[in-house]
Image (cartoon, rainbow, N blue to C red; front, side, top):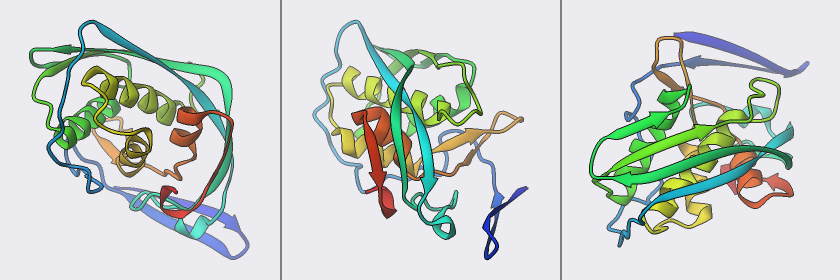
Length: 203
């Protein structure tokens, strides 16, 4: 089990342990699981989402992989991730280098909305990983909105945002996933653009 220590200042030292799991496990439903009237669309849905710069976390003592939140400030920039999604009869075909993170959110989404068909997904991120532009949250936001549109938009943008934040994961070297740090700034900035000020609880 990996351990991370983060020092926010002289009096702020927090330590976290990361437990990995298989994509599709440990789903957080956010009270959104119910019967939706799904209307899968024909053809391919394409969504382009802007990346973000996250300026600061507001409460480092709440910044935790076990519980999203902590608040933050950030803004969208003109660097984009793109997702193409098509409904299929069954199965899951993902064309993306970081397949486990997409597979997990697809299982989250399918379980929440009750979709029993398959998806064909092609994703392209902005290719600037680990430099502070939120490649994981941006590609997940693009894919989430494309999945939603492909089955008739049963969830609102804010519901998708909460579902993403509570099920935000990063992949491990072994191909599993672990819950990551998420303040909600990334999905909000990528969904609405402009400046984002996020309080606790992704609100």
